[in-house]
Length: 313
Image (cartoon, rainbow, N blue to C red):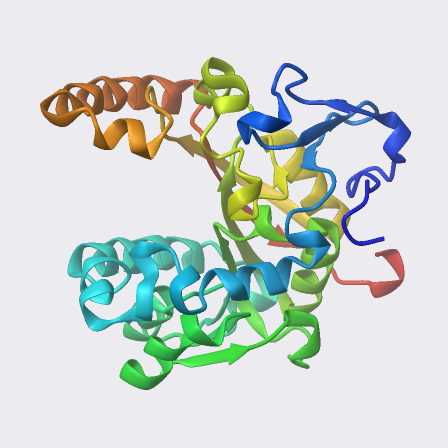
């Protein structure tokens, strides 16, 4: 039932096999309502945010006055500042080229690589892929978010739910979920559909929240990425994300983490004035440490698609 407790999406344990992740967090404080599965340890929101309809929740986030300030109207000024600025585009081309080069077998024989990004927002990564000679397709639930890339750059962004778009099987050598998988109701179902779409030997590239991070350990329920208000439905560790991928028919081959934050609240950071530069310096030093230890609060995991057999899923 939408809005009610839910079973663990990784191991299937029922709600009675759950415990509060941060039991000291009072509901009145606005802290995220996350539980830990007592059988496998997965951390997830229960009940789901947005009355259980996460797609409607995210569409509403992009609509009119509810749009986050950094995304309002998807205007050209925002695009230059964010996904379409030169620095981002340079990074995205390098990042995509490395993953396209990691394809094996049938996927490597597909030249140029065909790329799919799910949750592509305004489409900046699709433009970088197109500049590399890739045929790039994006999927986005919000028409507001997709409009800029479609109208300004002619990008192929399909608006709607991935499962409803009828994309062909084994059509993509590279599939990207960048800051997306933490927002979906069932990571397991999403990754199974991604496996159907990926050529054997193709690469699945995921960037998401790492709950097994130094930031989360230090902040507890104040961890700024533990955010049901932003629709973060699942908080992963590298081990849990790897288990989801193997369950769907992928073989993980690369794991990295990055990010460390001392001051969690954006409002608190804004009020710091000149002191904020020293906090940033300390966070940058901390980031260098957590990257070496695998304890950054963002998790990047790459995997290759094995032989696809839908009867095994």
